[in-house]
Each structure stands twice: as C-alpha cells, then as structure tokens.
Image 1 (cartoon, one colour):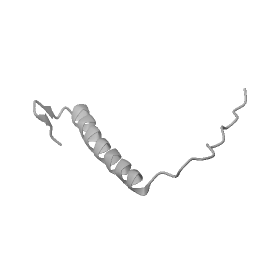
Image 2: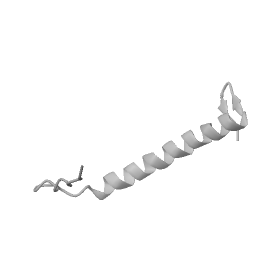
Image 3: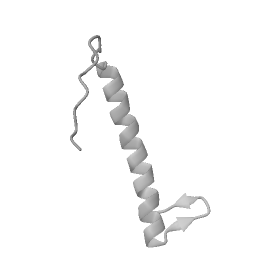
Image 4: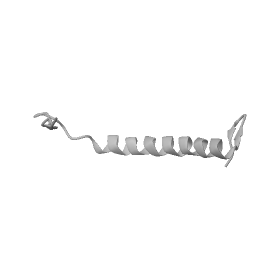
Length: 53
C-alpha cells in the first residue's frame, strides 16, 4: 500500500498570525496546568483544592 499525498486546496489561505499566537498561548496554558496536575498526581501531592508542587 503506498501513500499518495493529497495536494493542497487551490484556494487555501494561510493561517493568520494572531491565530497562531493564540493557539501557542492556549497550548502553553494547557500543558502548564495538565503537566502540573500530572506531576502532583504522580508524586501524591494532590489536595482537595487541587495540587501543590
């Protein structure tokens, strides 16, 4: 089975810079809190109010 890439749409517009920046900010916030929760969970530092690092 071979992979044939699908060509880009002929009228595709590039993504706006502000959307890329906003996505990067949301990614950072999500990773920060999810990573902090994961570290708290793995180290046993979860509290009823959240977690403490």
